[in-house]
Length: 349
Image (tube, rainbow, N blue to C red; front, side, top):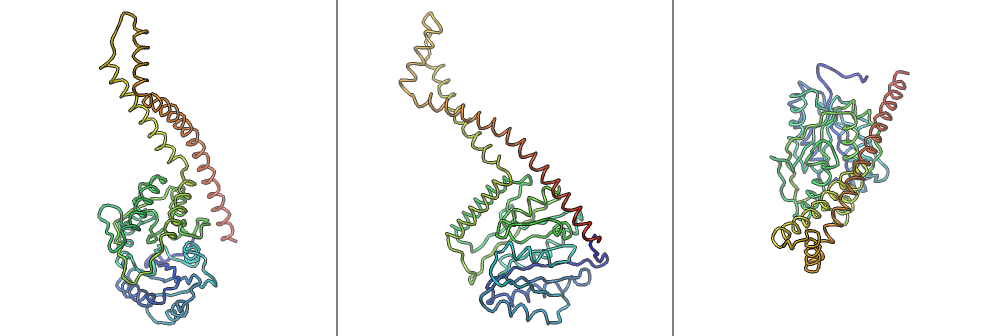
């Protein structure tokens, strides 16, 4: 077990930074000023990770360490850019807090989220993750270009289906975590998929996850990612989502195919009740009716057959894959348990 102060718990704030010389000094100051009223109840540490910046970000971060601000500040430097996920992992490894908060360097999510995350943990001590969500009811999004917002909302809407917890925003960097539990997780992703990996592994630990409304406000000076990077990030997120829950898309594909098949079958059935004429021999009358309907609308028969056959086959495969997914999750839980046991033994030595 980690040695944590009970009377004044430690809160770690991690900020990954890459070429943030224009704003990081001001934003760090805003964060440090904001937490001052909390110092009577909590201790704070600020873990700044310089992700291989090519500007003056590194020296600016180092200058914050020497300041007497009532908050312990530490800096982790990467020689080259390794990605947001790698920077956050380094911050997690360097953190010691009972609660670990991750913020974005440009504060597109304002500093007041720190207090809201802490309040959520205070309200329910059993919570393990607090997710800031601008896309849930009560959330706010401002100044984000419509194209970027559309891609982000669609990606999060799809990705939310890959997790058992129905979370509206699964890609947001701003979150609060149970520190000891977070540091006990083996994490591998170096890109933005780390946000999905963390949620997945918290789910495997049966962690309690809370989502609260967030405020995403782009600043005028914010560097804009080009569309190619946005699409690449969305693709990477979706591929990771398929890894987490490969049955998700099969369910909707199968449901769609079966629905189309039954719709066309309903069209044929309605036509049957309207146009069927009994002429002494039922089966012969039925044959003439079907032949007439097929000649008039062959696509209805084709779509009905194809939709029902492929849809039912897809749903059958879904049932099989669901069993395999459950087996995989049990294996992952076992591996996490073994990892925990070995980690605990190593710490004890």
